[in-house]
Length: 231
Ligand code: SAM
Image (cartoon, rainbow, N blue to C red):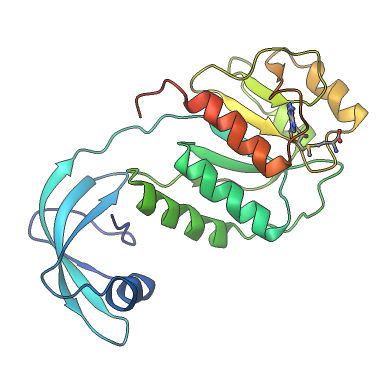
C-alpha cells in the first residue's frame, strides 16, 4: 500500500517511485520487477499495480492496472495537541493517523515545551502510517496555532472535546466529526482552563481516573472517537 508523490493514478500509467520507496521495496521487502503493489491517494483512490523497474540506486517506477477502491471522504476527528518532545510527537502523529483523524493541528499552550514543529517530517511520518494501515488519505498536517487564537477562530457549531484530567466531566468523547484537544505534559494552566470553559463549543471530557501521559491520552481519546465507526 504505497502513497506516491503527486501523480495521476489511472489505467496503464507509469508512476515514478520515490527513493525511500525503492529502498524499502527492494532492500527491505526484497521485492522486484513484476511484483504486485497497491497505490493510493486521496483524489484517485486505491489502484492495483506492479513494480515496473527497480534500480539499485533508488529509482524505479510502478505500472498501474485498475482501481480497486474509489476515493472517499475519510471523515474522522481533528486532533488538536500540544507538541511534545520529538519522539513523543512522532508517536502521536503515527497513532493519530492509524486511528483515523482527518487533520492534525499542533496547539501551543502556556506549558508547551517545544514551539518547534517540523511539519514536513510529520507529514512523512503520517504518510508512512497511512501506507501501513491502508487508509486512502494522509491526514492534513496544519500549521501550529496558539490556544487563544485557535479558540478565537473556531467555528462555534463544531464541538471540541477538551481532555481535562481531574475535571468533573464523566463521559468520554463520543461525537463523530469532532475535534479532540489534548494538553501538554504539564497540563493546561488555570487561565487556559477558564478560557476553555468560557467557550460554549468546548466540552470537558475525562479519559478516566488515572492521569495519562499526553501521548497515551491522545490514543485513549481517539480510540473513544473511533469506536463504532465503520471506517
Ligand atoms: N501535569 C498534569 C497534572 O499532573 O495534573 C497532567 C497532564 S497530562 C500528563 C497531559 C494531558 O493529557 C492533559 O492536559 C490532558 O489533556 C490529557 N489527560 C491525561 N489524563 C487525562 C484524564 N484522565 N482525563 C482527561 N484528560 C487527560
